[in-house]
Length: 326
Image (cartoon, rainbow, N blue to C red; front, side, top):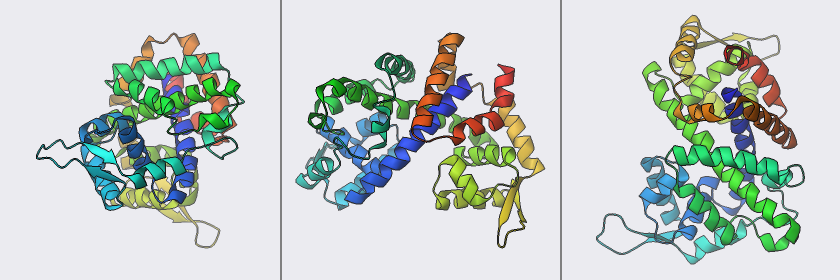
């Protein structure tokens, strides 16, 4: 049941994140770059270490993004000999944040949930994500959420009816905590997969390819909510490891993907050794089964609300063996 909760959470997050990224990229930055600008706005003078903790990124990832933002003149550093130099927004950085504030009538995907969710259900789900975030050492996220809501960094609340503002702030909290939950679980799983010489995306692809025998690269991208280029890269790396093979299909130039016996053994080994060692998911063991079932039903509903219809088929194909063991 907890694996279903994670899968539903992950698909909800990926859908919102992907659609949101398309909106943000029109302003000349990526969503992760904008997220760093939000963090610096919420915590003026923040250093790369704090940004890494709040954003749930590795230090090298943060360093790369900060370098890009410096080149774009959206941020600057304190002039100091201190190795942990504070970072601040420039006027151009503030303008980017303003340009990306979502208002009433915008296509921001989170707004799709405004009319389809009750606040008590949202509060219950937020409570679970808050608990896992705090237990996983991500205490900064709560202060960050309070600040981005107070400063209206993501949404211009003044453009919405007063009756909607409380729920909107809950949705912003949900989105941020959902992101931390999914990334924390993914990061924890990635560490476990290293001994099998697999990355998290490669493991996800193998799961899909085993469940959807003969899937094409484009269909793989759709199921995983990846870009075609990301799916092609994962397929290329799996081919190099002799974990998948391709057969020609009946349609001209179509290639269908299958996993090898070597991959089957790796997946079985992973199921036996790793799936019950993901600390973030094991925190859900403290949630009563009836409550987790209610939350899963609510997450199904939220996924349907953002047109994530394929998640039901994915769970039926990929998680049934796991659910049967629980």
